Length: 302
Image 1 (cartoon, rainbow, N blue to C red):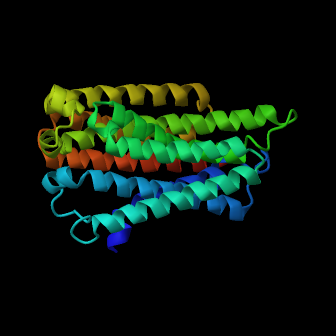
Image 2 (image 1 turned 60 degrees about the horizontal axis):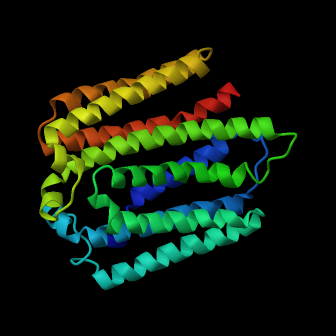
């Protein structure tokens, strides 16, 4: 159980479920051509979650000092799992993910795709060891990696199967997936800043330069509120431009995505203590889930 908590098994499960939704709900197989067999798609999921698991481990290794202050009751490395064992687990998970990426890239006839796995693994290490200490930079990097966990399905499923005859349809589906990736980036970016607000005390003692340390918790909270309002505006533009003929889809987005985001923006305006910011972080996670579940609606649209 300690290992499962260390690798954030709930988050890894969410990544796997979202990738399954992309393949079996978002991509209508009667319209588009896909590349991976069920077995190879399963290996793609394993590769993605393995690299992500390695990322969580290396992040915790570098966060031992700050977690002692921010999350003293949730510390695993040094208490339940030794730092040496954690380093070995990091290497193991990352090695598995990168090796599977190498195999899959050659399997679909696109060897350069292997570079994606190397870049993602390297970015997670650089984030944990250096970038997370820099205001905004770390938040942007980790949010890009979250978006890539969606896009990588399209890269492996759609691009290798693209021909002159199906290029228009394949490109359209890739654009739709990119829209979801942008949504994931925005929600995760906001949530990362909220988490920085929660962790401001430990981060300050560790010498980090996160946004709340530079601007203060109150100003940073207002920044996240503005970012949330911008996200709401983007989603409203999207549904009125592309989904205006689908009343059910519009209703879903209004109730399950935009409604909670409005609630979150109001809470951000009034939030003052860690309990309130923790609640906001949880709500953002729920919005991420409801947003990803909207992929099921596209099967009805197509």
